[in-house]
Amino acid sequence: MKGFLARHPSTAVVISIVALVMATVGTGYAALKLPKNAVGTKQLKKNSVTKAKIKKNAVTGAKVKKHTLTGSDINLKKLGTVPSAEIANTIPPAEATHLVGSSGQPGFETGSSNFAGLSGLSFEPVGFYKDHEGIVHLQGMAQVGEAGPLGVIFRLPPGYRPASGRINVISVFCFSIGPCATDDENDQEDYNTLLVAGSNTSAEGFNLEGGVISTNGSIVSLEGITFRAES
Image (cartoon, rainbow, N blue to C red; front, side, top):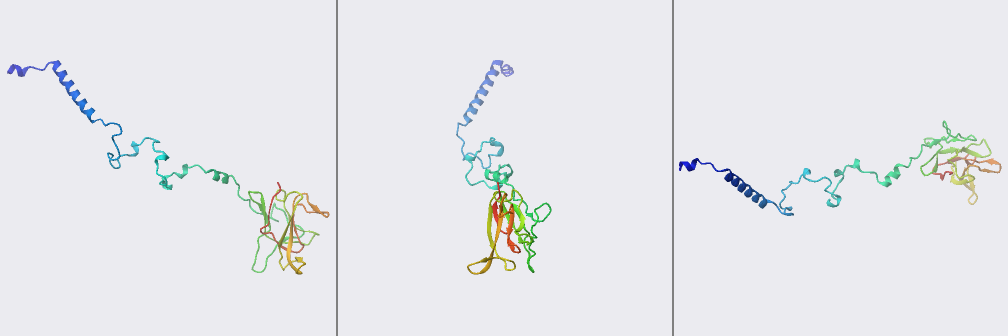
């Protein structure tokens, strides 16, 4: 018996035992290997899929439920400008009003001036500007002078006039505090006529070029008068 207990296993026996253990472990591993598509939503623990487990660019727009993303979910700074906004960004704003009689601007003619107003009332000064669509806008209340045969208030500079050779004729409301044209039908004075002349314009020997003209001594409102500038 003592001789039997003192004997050591041979190298072949040791190798056989190790091989047997490895074979057994391998069989157990193979038995635990999950088949394809075996794990579904029921097998996933709540909150177990973290950001680190999701492959980059794996979630596409098709995978996101419609109408679920809000402004807080989107980095607005990284969004591009929509085409219509790009067009809007290229449109220049309307320029500042050019005030007649101020430095570097057309001056009043034939003794015309801004209407001084009435007691307790004041009016916009005479001026003009062009918007981004090339439309010229007139403004203000003018006291038409009497120093010449024509009541030229001022002359628009080139680029702010009607088309060359054209005269725009506008009827404006008559103020009883100044001369007006006569309504022959009712024998009442109720309107003034305003002329806005383009370049290369004359009549009866008078140079009308660029002129904003009305009845001598009248008071004329230029508010709301617009026209397309010469091209």
